Length: 368
Image 1 (cartoon, rainbow, N blue to C red):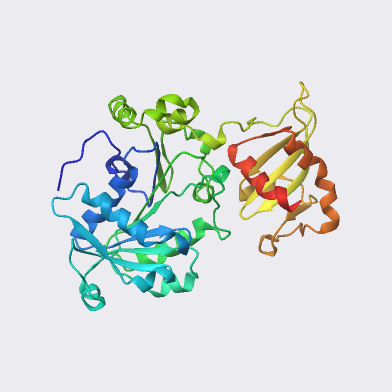
Image 2: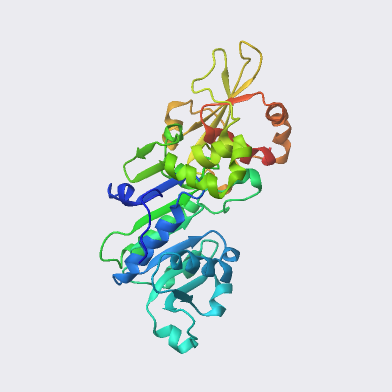
């Protein structure tokens, strides 16, 4: 295998904490995907396959598989090709095997090769994913686990955190050692379903930070000055766009930069509404700031928060699955009550206790 330099990202330190969930948020071209693929490749050489997760079935394409082979071949002494049954692409569950470069394989010969990775589209029905067992999985890898929501990308309507936990539990039963989940992303935002599910304090996620929880570790990786010089030499466009350079090199969450944060409730504000969204609650407080610049404060709470507020408080839900005692599902007649909140959002007259609170309120916006 050709030698890789020590400037780019490596998973070693992150995995040394022995947590089931392992994340890296890092700049473009920092080597996150390359080292992830080589973790999977080295596991395969030791006889253990891995799972690769994609959000949608449409994200699994021949080009995606070929690009993966190209990444590996940049560093392998003997080139390989990734082979698979072409018809499996449309099903959203594809077993990919490693073959010799330039060799032609029939479907019978492909089936005799050991599985390198199983690519799974999370939009598949869960019973189908769980019915196809693959023993002794080493890693579950999800690249691009953070969407660029400002760029039009969308998370699945299903709870991605729950889906991945289900997959982990199913395959972990047949594994010799506990499976490790590794997930990599560019720093579009610190808001995403996996961090919500794990109750990550996203205020700790700063460029260069290393955040460790009970069952997760997050590496907010930053490139070294030496690697930065290499990347600039190869792509001088970074020199001309300061905002993009802060995102690309400094690891700043570009989509979160203009969110107005106020961690504590402003003086004189009163609780007006409570929205329930999955496990979490969103409280809306109304008042007027001392400088008159905002009139609502929006706060995200965990599932235990409900015990701290009045039992008489009406809780608004949007799905029957979120119904609890004291909750009502929003109807058409009640929507006019929230017109002022929508106007305040449009005029940027709302502050938030955390970044997650704004994105949650954005999800509420089209429903009120």
